[in-house]
Image (cartoon, rainbow, N blue to C red; front, side, top):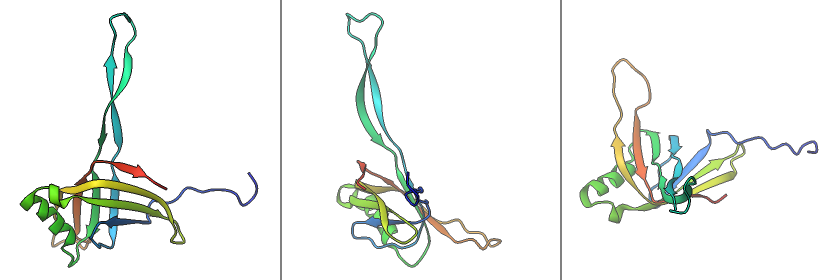
Length: 147
């Protein structure tokens, strides 16, 4: 590789989360769960010692968002919508974008049919001075890295 052609990996502390219709700044953490496809073992009667491996259902783990609490109620209201009327009318698409040191988008994951399944309010203590953190756990029906 020629001098100046080195490609360093991107750091994980600069990212942006876009949710249909919700503007929320300042996520401190975003965890993208894994994807797995279950193997199905199948043996034909003519194969006495060999088991074939077929692909089964693909599963997507949840996404977790954490942020310092502010006056914004948008994400909480999204969760409350699911509680009040179910997930059908609350599904949204999400994009998670990795940003490099100069602010350019470098990697993007698109998540489809997402809705919040769990909300965790901040813990409080009179002895501390930490930022109060809200957490939202989101289920979805697919994730794809598009760049």
